[in-house]
Amino acid sequence: MRRELFSTVMLLGWFATAPRLAAQETETGKGTELDGLRSTGAPRTRNADFDADAQAPQTAGKLSELIDRVIAREHEQIKTLDRYTPIIETYIQEVKPDALLGIVPKSDYYFLGQADFNGRLRVLSSIDHGRKSSWIWSFNPVGFLQMVFIDRGAFDRAHYQFEYARREFLGEVRCFVLDVKPAPNVRGVRFIGQIWVEDQDFTIVRISGKYTPAVSFSLRSFEDEYYLHFDSWRMNVKPGLWLPGYIYSQELGRPMSFSGPRYKSQTRLWGYELSSGAREEELNRMLVESQSAVKDEAAQHDRSPLEAQREWRREAENNVLDALQHDGFLAPPGDIDKVLNTIVNNLEVTNNLSEQIDLHCRVLLTGSLEMFSIENTIVLSRGLIDVVPDEATLAAMLAQEVADAMVPKSYQDQYGFSDVSRLPPTKILKRLSFLNEKRETENNSVKAIELLKKSPYSANLKSAGLFLAQLHSQVKALKQLISPRLGNQVFFAAQLLQAAPPLQPANKDQLAALPLGARVKLDPYTNRVTLMKTKPSSPNSPREKMPFEVTPLVPYLTRYVEAVRKSADSNATAGLNQ
Image (cartoon, rainbow, N blue to C red; front, side):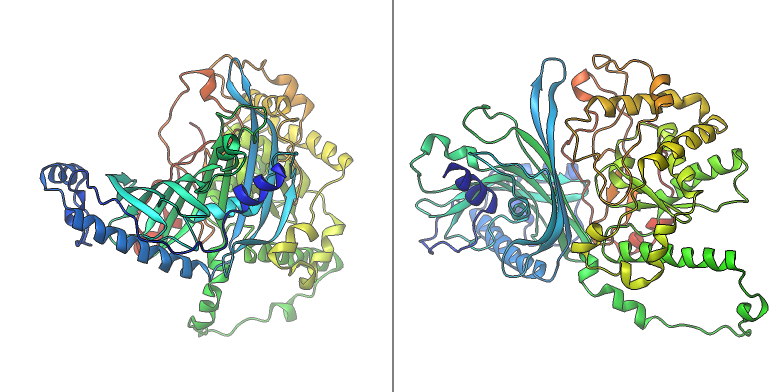
């Protein structure tokens, strides 16, 4: 009975609308940030805002108007989201206390699927790795999807009280912050916490709190243990359109007995553009015929059997890449590809391979640590790029796949038929596979070491060995993180491990690996990825190293600007070295 309560009430949440009761609200203003409520123009400077707000009079009527606008806008958002079926990925690390490092992962769980907001919250289909349950609790992907909303069915004055807290900037976006709690005597599961409302369209852009029952259960002393705290963010992806992109959730203060787990989790949503019909815009583009006659290359040069075989494999390569990008699992070509291509080019040139092969790289959008190659394309996952500490370590990962790409794989020839790879998002990762056999992986590792020794990275391979040593030390706790969905997991090359210095967990200056989310920024609408431009920072304590750990993300919110979006791919990104 207790397990059912946790999985259905805490994680599945509320789907029915509670009875409408008398309106309850608290219209208490703190300061006068509400004085500019009617203005939707460009925001003033931060200092001018707060100075003016501190001197203006308190206005309860402005708060009432703000609440009405926020409620109306949130209902518009709910209707807007009904059109979308984005990809959703939740990665969970159950943690345990550690005397030196504070808390460390002890097990992990992974959910990947396609969300559907139309009608009710559900996950159409998911790949569930490491689904965990006990007689008290269970993880459920739908529960994490629920966290994109405050209350899908009854966000109004009848069910909630609102109190003004402050004004605050989230990145470049000026926001009103409101405290929200269930109204007295309201039945059902409701939200309690804070919301951030941007001050132009009054869209909720951040939700931080938890769901809580307003009616006592018989297990009153354990009631709060069944509702998870979360911090949910929305991104401005088009004019007036804010979509959920990231959710962080954690429970670290629970007693270990007779309650739910101690854990940290990241949930990411992307692929909104895939279901919005944006691809049909390509049909409306004007095509200009060349004034010069198109040459018939086929008539001038017939294919030899070897050339025909290579042409077929390039067709298979293109079919796979198109299918993965079409279904939202492969990022469009962008700046991170250029960084990876530069490293691969360094390996090719120093090993005299540039005339034999022409390799290029792409980014898989999933957070697991994996990589694979198909014909001339090397694919690295977002999660793997996130955690590598430096360029030499990334070069070691790429060298493994350069060696792999040099060996043709006959089993990939089947993808030359487009129907083999044209699969819906809910099936594509289950049907496609680029996993090498153990012997192939070992042979590739030997070749990769040869490539690295002749490369510009040969003097810095200790960092790559240290990265592998750190991952190897946590392999039991991170089984789902290192389990590939399409390709190969990180290979623990013996030569690199032997060259690594000893792991020193107590040494705050030894950074063997980065936390999850440390490098890559993902646009949830276009699926484009860029390298984050963060200021260099050093841990003050071993507890701040957090290798491979789930950590909160604090997105720097900006308003959508068309000109900036169009030129994003042409801007240079920061290097990999910190």
